[in-house]
Length: 309
Image 1 (cartoon, rainbow, N blue to C red):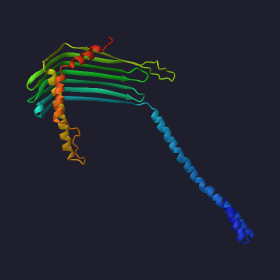
Image 2 (image 1 turned 45 degrees about the horizontal axis):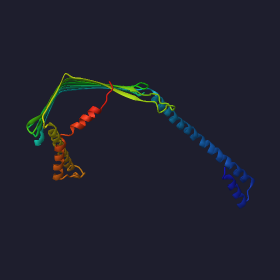
Image 3 (image 1 turned 135 degrees about the horizontal axis):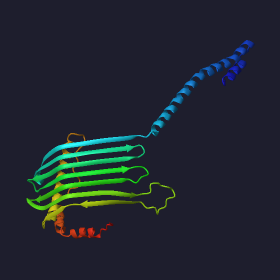
Image 4 (image 1 turned 180 degrees about the vertical axis):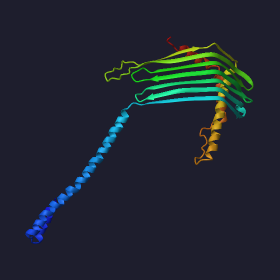
C-alpha cells in the first residue's frame, strides 16, 4: 500500500495514461492488498496455535510441581568378618585389624514440605587392633558396640535429635620401646544424648532483638568399671608417639603422591617447609622440659567449667 502512490505518480509524470491503464493501475494495489491479507491470515492461525502450546505446557508443569511428594530410602549392611594385615615398617611393625559382626540398617524419609525422618542403627560384635615388632605397639579390643540415632524435623515443629551408644567392654594397652606405658579398661558404658530446641518458628518483621533462641543438650553417661594405669614417663612417651606417627604418615603420603605423579601429567612438587635437625632437637627438648607443667593448665580449665544440672 505505501508503494502504490509512488508507482502511480511515476506513470503520470513519465507517460500519458489512458483510462484503461488507469483502471488497471488502480486495481492492482487492491489485488496486492487482498493477496497479502489472504496470505497473512494463514500463519496467524499457526502462530496462535503455536503460542498456545507452551502456555498449556507451563500450566502442566506448574500443576506437577504443586503436587506433594515423598522419598523413602531403606538400607542394610551385614559384614561377617574383615581381616586387615599391614606392615608399618619399624614404627608399628606388623599390625593386624580384625572386625566381626558388623551390622547396620537405616531408614531415610524426605518430603516436599521439608519433612525429614532419619533412623539408623549400627552394631559391632568385636573389633581388635594389634601391633607388634615396632617402636609403638599395643592392643585395643572393643566388644559389643551398638549405636542408635534418630532425627526428626518437620515444619512448624521443634526439631528432635536423639543418639544412644552402648558398649560392652573396651580394653587398651599402649607400648613404647617394648615397655607398657598405658593400660586401661572401660566396661558396660551407656551414653544418651538428646537436644531440646526453644526457637521462634514464626519469623515476623516485628520481632525484637530481645527474642531469645535456646538449645539445650541433655546427656546421661553410665559405666560399671573405669580403670587407667599410667607410669611416670607416660606423658612424654605419648607426646613422642604422636610425633613419630605424624612423621610416618606424612612420609607415606609424600611417597604415594610421588608414585602417583609418574602416571599422570601433574609433576611432583616436594614439600616447601623443611626443618633443620637443630630446630627439631630444640623443639623436642622444649617438649620434654614442658611435659611436667601442662597438667595444671588442663586442671584449671576443667575446674573453671560450670554445668547446670
